Image (cartoon, rainbow, N blue to C red; front, side):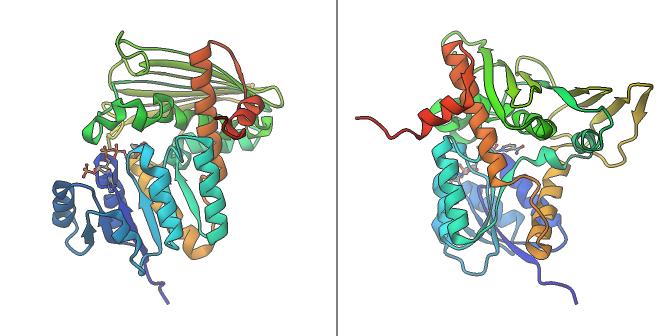
Length: 356
Ligand SMILES: NC(=O)c1ccc[n+]([C@@H]2O[C@H](COP(=O)([O-])OP(=O)(O)OC[C@H]3O[C@@H](n4cnc5c(N)ncnc54)[C@H](OP(=O)(O)O)[C@@H]3O)[C@@H](O)[C@H]2O)c1
């Protein structure tokens, strides 16, 4: 007997939200039943694209619907905590885009709320579902390179999009630019270096092409050290062209080198490759399934349907989402002070009661 489809609500119908809608629409076992936008024009676009979905301009009306299984939140980052809290309080499971929050306190509060309401909280680090980046993880896990010691995640791309009302270029709404794209790379680095324990310190540097906006960092690099000696380099430039990402992982006996290139981050026609050295020979390994964020977004929706229907694990847990935010915030402090930041000290400061 086939199961009833998982009923999705979607909050946010902007550039990335439209891709979420498309992915939900395409996924077997998922149904897009409600959408919330903010402006009338986005609501009209949603109605036209999905005539069978109910469309609201106030997310509270969507949250109040009692026929939804899960709500997918794809709004500017400063609104994540407010809207995600409303979703969980409304009794729905939650898929929350990255960053999970713009502070550690926001992440902690969502983790507690999800536990209290006994709801799933999945975070949108879809790169974990990539056939390419996932193959790197699989090889590391099976010991192909021995014990992993070093990870490089590097991106060279064109500038960020502005976002609705320019929110992405406004630090009070975006949080910082490390929370935008490098957050995915911190997530990957910690994922690959799982055997190295938790991150213990971050040292970072950044600069901007705009003298009057030093906070909008076009170039950013960080070194993250892990408990058991492994370390990762995360580096990004927005002053380049197209979208080119590299991952290198080396271990006690071998090395991996994965690359992905596209005219844009959202291309459906990328080129990608994986070269692998097991200590004896270098091979180019086949990657059978096409990879890129649009494909991984579809896989993320399918993963969530499985998690809800079959109790399968999430690809990125709330705890993973919190770690990624924490590393980004520690990196920003390091950029600001010019000093390495110890994660434990940073956390103690973050959780200290506010002084008046
Ligand atoms: N995982 C990834 O790879 C990835 C990629 C891209 C973006 N993201 C994340 O996705 C989120 C959205 O990014 P985006 O690029 O889609 O931004 P965007 O193009 O600016 O879209 C944001 C949308 O949110 C809507 N919105 C704002 N306040 C709202 C509210 N109160 N209720 C309902 N809708 C509201 C806006 O509505 P109007 O159109 O009506 O103004 C806009 O359409 C961000 O957190 C970003 O970090 C993740």
